[in-house]
Structures are given as structure tokens and as C-alpha cells.
Length: 243
Image (cartoon, rainbow, N blue to C red; front, side, top):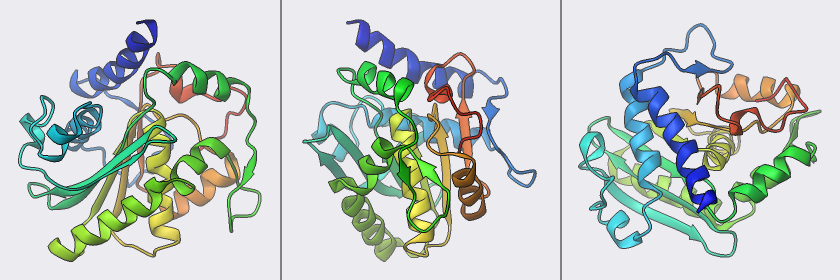
């Protein structure tokens, strides 16, 4: 029960910051990046919908969280990695004419485990092709070394085949935000895709200063929305210059 409350509180904190009208804390935002509060509220709803337990309701977009600002969304693909307890979905939002990619955050029964892991684990993986760039192996592997990677890329390709080269909006909450960031970078660096946009909520730190420099070069307009009172965006605590 305590773990359930912790997970709900983390997501609610991001929702309240975006929806209350207060200016959220946006990390590493270049001067030419424009924060769009309406888009943020829309993406928060997409990030919330992925926590729907009934996958049939999620796929048919009939879940309790599938209305309001995000009604009319067309689901293309739900990707579930049962072994690693991971989930993402891809579809098309006609109102903003964009592919939507959403990664789920940590399940309630494992949130304390990965918070503890973040508290003690050093950056332990060299990011391929980026000298001196170090990242958190767990977050990197959760996207690159599971079924999420191929499933998400396939979903994007199918959606763009139907709707043209529309923008790709990628989002996620908490651990899902970390995977969303690696996904956005992957699509730009390894697939050469244009129109990739990233906005995350409650994202933990994922890399060192060198990685952050590379990240901003490839995704200069990425936005990381956080709440100063949420512990997750401040983890791991031992490095101050993170992406």
C-alpha cells in the first residue's frame, strides 16, 4: 500500500505542477525553446493513460484516462516486455498531427528498488559513439536492450507510413521519462529522423556532463518538467551536471 501511494504521489506531483498554472522548473532549456503549457497538459494525459491496467481498454482507447484533451487518439502499437516489467505505446494524435510515443514509469512493486539503486549506483556505461559520455546502465538497457526498442521503432515507422513524416512527440513519467530520453536520442542519432520532440515529467538524471552536451546538440529543444519536491529528478544525487 505504501508503494502504491509513493507511485501515485510522484505522478500527481507532475500533474499538479503542469495543471496548476505555476511555472514548472525546466532543466537545461535553451533560450529559443518555447514551453507550451497546453501541449504539456496534453502529454501529461498521455503519460497518465499508460498506467491503465486493462490493455484492451488502452488499445481501444476507452479507458477512464483516455478522454478530455486526448480523445480521438488512434493507437498503433502497445509494446509490453513482461520479463522486465516495461511498457510503451505508439499512435497518432490527429489534433496535433503527430506520432505519440509514451513510456510507462516504474510499477508500484518495484519503485523502491530502483530508487535505492539510483541512490548508490555510479554512472557505469559509456554511451556508444560519444567520447567521455557516461550514462546509467539500467535506464539505457531498459530501452536499448529490451523488446521496447524494436517495438517502438516499428510502431513509429507504421504510423508515419500511414500519416506521412509528421512530428514525433515522445514523453514519459519518472523511469518512463528516462527511457523516453534515450529513445528520442536514438531516433535522431541512429535513425536520422527529423521532427523528434521530447517533453518528460519527473525524469531522473541519466548521464554526466559530457553526455548532456551531446544530448543538447542533438535535441536542443527537449524539455524536462520537474517538481522541486519530487525526489526522482534529483537522483542520482552525487553528480550535479547531468542530462
